[in-house]
Image 1 (cartoon, one colour):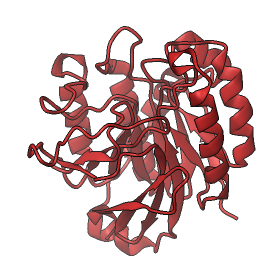
Image 2 (tube, rainbow, N blue to C red):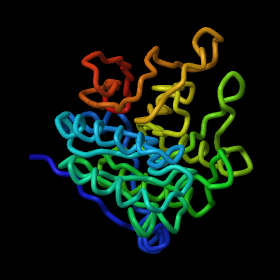
Image 3 (cartoon, one colour):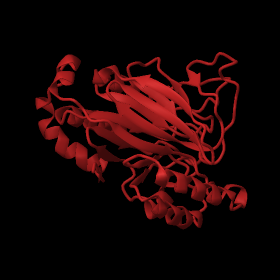
Image 4 (cartoon, rainbow, N blue to C red):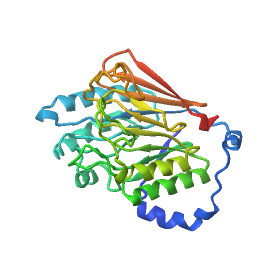
Length: 304
């Protein structure tokens, strides 16, 4: 049975050891990578923005219980939570979240959102905020890029250097990478929310890093927007995807307003089942309490 291995590696400790052999890493051409091996399919689940304690009511906790019960029955080797575990930094809600999380029966790996103060995230969820999780041949980079006093995202130079080193290490191990951050990097102005990592706060440098490793990075994965599945592919072959909230989602009529990118026509509270097989990543949006789904297929030329 496939297993996921979580490596709680701090940026500082990884960079100090990775620098020793960085010069010897060879990035093989894409055509040679594909010939090296046939990669088995992967499946995992993405949840986001549970916001326990929302409006000082128990409704968010009850919705998380319903979601967890469905996630437990769904196919997937692990669960990614893309931030805003609780609402407004409500410390008393973290134990409630964790108790429900136990019922899932799968490894769950969180990142903090702008509603998760870092000291509380480290106290209740994970002491090392920026870390890696490996699933077979795919490495997830989990990063905290949200501040509690802003809807925008922020990346430190040390974090971007860590991403660069992790991509080099993944190449050495013939693995691919998905980067998980709460706040998107992609520019999204009106009619979108306008919340992203601005150029002076790491966007420019991160995109430069992504371009260097575009044959290795499959996707950037985010929460934060509560707009269902929202995404862009103008930095192809790397996909930038925002995932739906477990608690609530809003239809901002982005498709009708010809906003760049795509926004699936499904906005009920839900989670996403992700399958990567061959050169395709399939996103199946599963509204909680419904048998209906919405689907998005993303081509992954890096794997073909």
